[in-house]
Image (cartoon, rainbow, N blue to C red; front, top):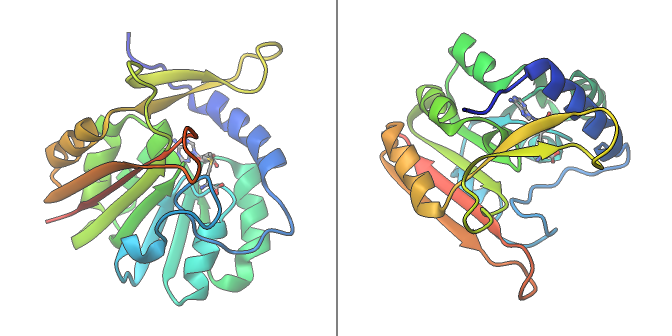
Length: 218
Ligand SMILES: C[S@@+](CC[C@H](N)C(=O)[O-])C[C@H]1O[C@@H](n2cnc3c(N)ncnc32)[C@H](O)[C@@H]1O
């Protein structure tokens, strides 16, 4: 049986996350990995004039881009998070929209130089549905870049994930994990001209690395 996304329940889960993850005193910053200052930076996006972050969470990366003159829009499922980011980062020019990503990309025809996700919506959305839509919303030569934890060996496809401890209200979502070669195949199937997926090592041996994927639209 395929993953059973219940968007209302996932929204509640991410609202709970927003209440704990959002920090009022955070500064703009852009990092693809889970280790501050480790790995490449926004140069992977090329030199975009417009960028869309999908599952933009705390908004720090978008605020960083907006401060550098890029037209920066973020989409996130959580109304709690979007309220917080809109208030916090309004002065940077970044714009935050509350929507489910598949719905947003289906309904809005605007196109971007870059679409990206940092442990964001690409991780939590069926790539068979998401990647073709992203491809449609990129300008010619536009890029998709995303990062997330690498798949655990032998555990591929949608992975069910409960929020918090294993007691209390059953809130869960799915995250999608594949080997790098499979991500490349999914991207070329979605119409991308080139796709490169690799695992970046953590700064310390034996720590969790980062899957980093970049693909270019024709
Ligand atoms: C791990 S968090 C975000 C990480 C983000 N880079 C940050 O700095 O906060 C994942 C985010 O993706 C959002 N998200 C999950 N599924 C989504 C979906 N289907 N559509 C839009 N946003 C989604 C969640 O609301 C959450 O804010």
